[in-house]
Length: 122
Image (cartoon, rainbow, N blue to C red):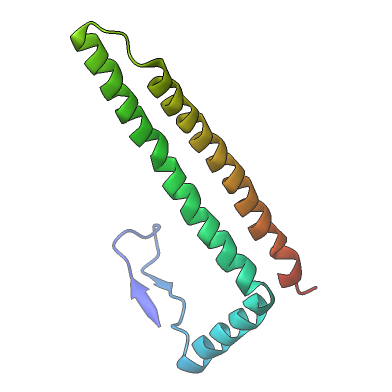
């Protein structure tokens, strides 16, 4: 099967395309992939859940910063000093969210990378 393209190198009219895999080829490919992934399916699912947690933890600092900004703006508008306990609580939450995100990210990477060795077929 050939396919005509609009921009081909000089002197070339057509290019050979890759044939579509047949239904049995696709089924065999899916079966082979399922066979390779079977020993580590639970670990990959756990790594995926951890990746979702990392994504959620990535949003938390922005929410905390908005809250902190609101406290500081309100204090500036009224001419008062912001409540140190409230500011410290938000700063600790901010740092905790950053730290937790890094920790969960490292664990997720470790879990998914440890899945590689059982999948190797040498």
